[in-house]
Length: 176
Image 1 (spheres, rainbow, N blue to C red):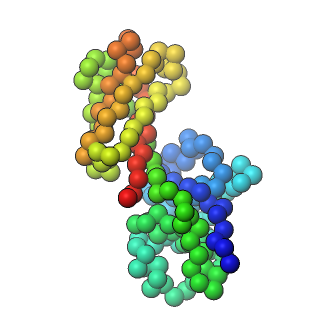
Image 2: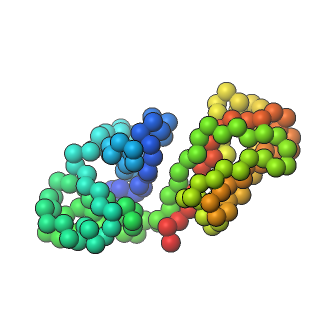
């Protein structure tokens, strides 16, 4: 039996960020502060699936679990893998890249060559970042460069941007 490939992405966020995330069909969203789980259906709806999801910290924890059910989705946080149980464990995202992203919101980036450096222990030097201004400042925004290093990201506005800009930086990377 071939493993289904319906779920394409796993997103981790705060519950306050949920409504600002675009609906991407095939995405499972875990709210790390509330424990809520949501799924973006292939039809373009976002539905709550909390009662149908079990989150394990490690793969060993999943393998030691003895109360499997075929109507539950199992998530392993350490490997970012999604499973169902049907006479054995079936991984739903085995061939999917382990690429992820997270946002750091409400940043005010000043003009000038030094920009703004934000610190976050999740950021690694191999990650990439993009800056997005809030909607009301989009007309003033000319562009920005985001440089990631171990534990921080520096955002520098394009030198033609005349005003400080408020927005969010999206950091993306790979688990490998």
